[in-house]
View 1: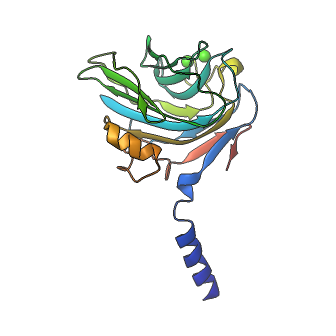
View 2: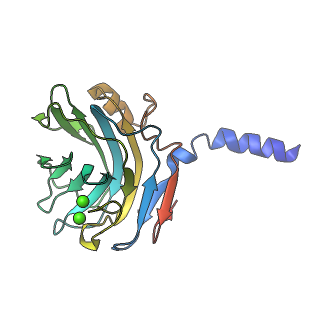
View 3: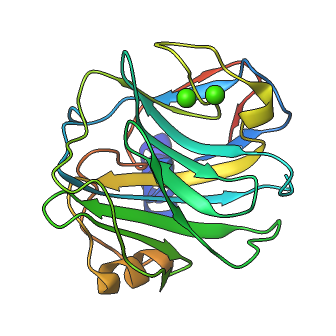
Length: 215
Ligand code: CA
Ligand code: CA
């Protein structure tokens, strides 16, 4: 009975244990990554992809923030570029966003894209970028793998340590539609938002390989 009560109390005190998970990549490697298993295939005509991260890597190299790789393409890869811009690539040329220096502390990012209009946007800590028009009519294809920590250049591997992620990354969530600015504000503030439809950090299976610590 005591055990049951203890479990009950722990459940009340820790309602969001899975949602508070966090990944730490302590060192630059070409071998460490975490695979995420999506709730549905990434056959997408729109998305919003959000994450929190902190890195002490300076602007001297590219940093991969998210990678979704199919057989022949980087279907959806998110980067901090060597010049500090943030970008994403849908199997080919990317779309780039100038941002203020993000610094070494935690930042919250959301990337949103819609095929119908080609609208591409970035929110940094809830503040929106200029809207870009990018890959109107394109579709993200299913059949790939989602990883954090490395940029694959083939299916599945050819990682480059000089592009790897070093630091902490968490709350990686993805919806198969464009979230409204109001919902993104709520997300940044930690309020409740619609459950992510593609990748839900609260429930998604995280499969770490190499030197990654799951906190
Ligand atoms: Ca690469
Ligand atoms: Ca690549």
